[in-house]
Image 1 (tube, helix red, strand yellow):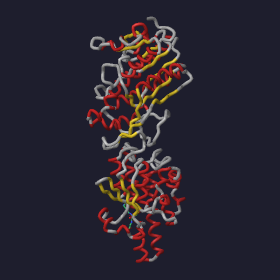
Image 2: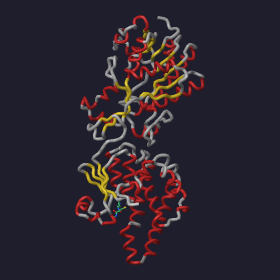
Image 3: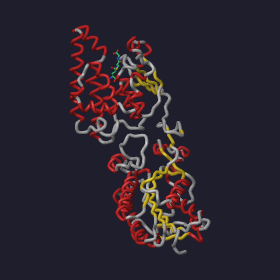
Image 4: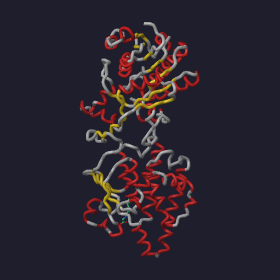
Length: 488
Ligand SMILES: N[C@@H](CCC(=O)N[C@@H](CS)C(=O)NCC(=O)O)C(=O)O
């Protein structure tokens, strides 16, 4: 079979997606060239490709290897479209990350050079991966095509399995840059977690993981947490669509449903992204800033909860029933099934460990420490010094004047320290562009100080980030006046 008008080259033909795509292209009447690695010639039976309907007339299999970037020239020569799917996968960390990445980039650039040499290639589709998008510290619900994975973050958090994610991220960037520089019509397709049937003899890795619960493989459950999945047939159709529609440019995500699997691993698989546990109960008082922190955190993590009001002005915190939950007689208290935890700081750490979605502590050690420190300053060195019971005591002992002066001086001391601490990290939020634990503690704290006539112009950083908090729906929904026990 000669290459010519309409012939499509698919790299990595023995893989899960590529083999399915070859089958679909043949069904559509296309002529296909595919590449497989020569090293596997002796131990790999290619009959699953050769026996596909239409293969004997319209499928040609050639040897090429990403380790030899020039080896793709023959497969690409004369083709009108190239679908570059071949990619090194090494989740066991057998090779150093740099080796995997170098092979992926050099191989891809070799393929793109072959496309330029051929002079017949009108369109290239590079198959990237959601791994090139989602692994970063950006604490948002939706990541579109403008998001990139952060390779330093991957190196820190996934030392063994990270080479695939890093190589996909850097290869996609390199491909886009090369195409831009050389005027090559290239689009990148970013499928999420691919599932569905397969024709290749090797058990497709993502399908194996998707079946973790069926196979009872608990170690693999975590890969499925909040995972966006897509059917292999849709991925194949997206490739074919992109070949035929040169007007579509840039990066394109290809995803379908989101499987939300409860952190405990087995309990639920639902069809939407809002979580999960209906067992959480929060004992709260609408005006309590400590309760507000927890309400804000629960909202950020998308956790629904039952609200149980404890009326502090009526002394309900001293009821014997409540005392069983917190012998200190303070709100908030969180009950999660049979776990009871009080003190907002402890609750936040509990949530972080048990509901890790939307992390409230960044991975970077300095930023993490700073978040803990800022939260702790609010929790131990500001709020306890202006809490109602203490102020009442001061008022009784020393009079109302002393009460307000005491509160003001302690709040200002804490705020001044926070201004200095955050100075080099602050951006839209306390420690950067994302809402973390420092913000969860700071936002309600700043909100309540108007009770004490604090001159906030002395604290420009805190004033600025407070403006950002006021634009956050999760913060607004947790505010006192929107609570069921609010008396406004
Ligand atoms: N460090 C604790 C402090 C809790 C606290 O002070 N709660 C206040 C409301 S913000 C309370 O329950 N006060 C009741 C009282 O003083 O009797 C936390 O963060 O949960």
